[in-house]
Length: 401
Image 1 (spheres, rainbow, N blue to C red):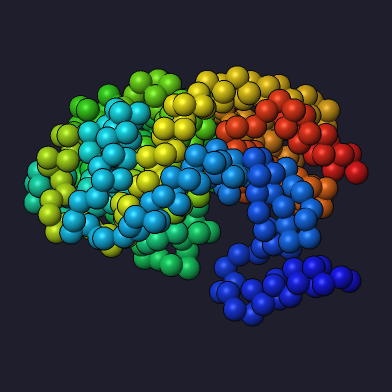
Image 2 (spheres, rainbow, N blue to C red; image 1 turned 90 degrees about the vertical axis):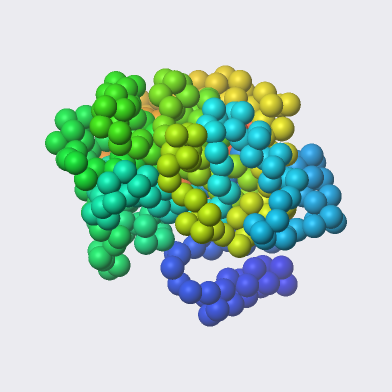
């Protein structure tokens, strides 16, 4: 064993001694990245089809992105929300433009964005009738985060059971089953929340008819529609936000992950109607949210999306990814389905997929699961057909082996 190999092993052993064991990590220490490739401490190269879980949309080492962050570090990193800062103002304007929403609150993460959305919905309802027993309808198999509010609306009992009771008054319906939602609505319902494309829960896109019926129901009953675009947003489906494909605008939207392309940042956005009738000064806050460094990242990311025609590229290359995944599914009878939208795809197996993911990692391909039996594909949005062919070649070998 040479010194480099020993060093990587020693780092892993040190991590296991020092870090709280809430992740079963893969046995690799990534050291640097370039484009769609990651390199470990030994210099081994890996094709990345995870992108930090749909985060690194622009790939690694983007010069414009890096330069913008370096320039902001040399100016100022943090001042708090007691004061204005130019990057936050510019980022908010650009985010409003691409989303069509009216007001922005910057957070540090996706889970915090969901927390803010929940608070806004409950305050909106409280101001209407003064009650504090309002209910939120969420979806089965959903995933919204690990904090107590976000966990409470996450539709997987396994994630919640050790931490109950949650925030309370949450009811669960079935995605794409309008009648299951309608049956839960009552005079205490203040919001319906779901991912426009479920990610962790199995790569299930919401259907247009379901979205349209829900939008009409929410309008009729003055219920807020909250769409979680944390994983499926920021161009991943071939639209900046997945709901834009159908033009069905939410009252509140959450975003994070690729919003900062690696810098921890999120946001929740709302219509002017909700903003004027929900959170006011003192209702919500964050020390770090919207600081100059994070917002410089957002601002540059949105510029680069436009300059590099990322949305158009996703639409072109995702059709090829679907074609190649369909071919792979047809080849193996233990792959039962491909589903997804854009560059958020899943292959469904009739068996656990952990061994295939581990085998792929050894062959220089980074993949993740969505549940025990689905391989999830969320690569950087800059991937090419050549990258897809390479991924298929490696994965095919692992499946055949």
